[in-house]
View (tube, rainbow, N blue to C red):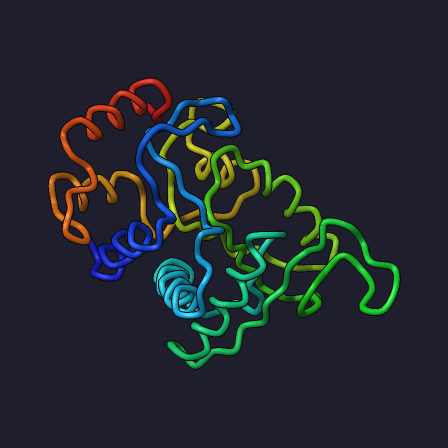
Length: 224
């Protein structure tokens, strides 16, 4: 596993973004883990987060793209932080763009924030986590309505590795439905591999009991 992935896993735990316990998801599933990107709240946290995203995007998609699109609302700070990091790490100026939930009809009008998307632009979409792919259903037509553009791929922070609407993971379903790849900085398999019975911030985060709960969850909801 790459060093930046190990660091990112510990970073999620340190920032209280990745939690373990008992959580009820929007889908109604009872999960032993939960990720909330809204818990990144300080300048140093967002700076580091942007760097991890930038490294993963560069690893999977390179630097040959023009716009980083972050769907409202959590995608807005993600896209801003990552374009800044991309500039610092790779010397490439990527434009950020996000959508509004409601179209604005005065001042800075329209549905988009940040840079417009032009004909010929190559776009990478950035999100926190994708479980069902519902947000892409809303995001995809907004981007394609802007002109003759190409979506290079989607980058999320965590691949939960569970079934989406069918029998495959949400990231695989997105690739099959929309034709562009979907990747994550880390997967839950990598999280468990790195944290199981190993100290993080002075304590073991995933012990035998929690590992058993995660295994049981994937028996029921994991990708076959």
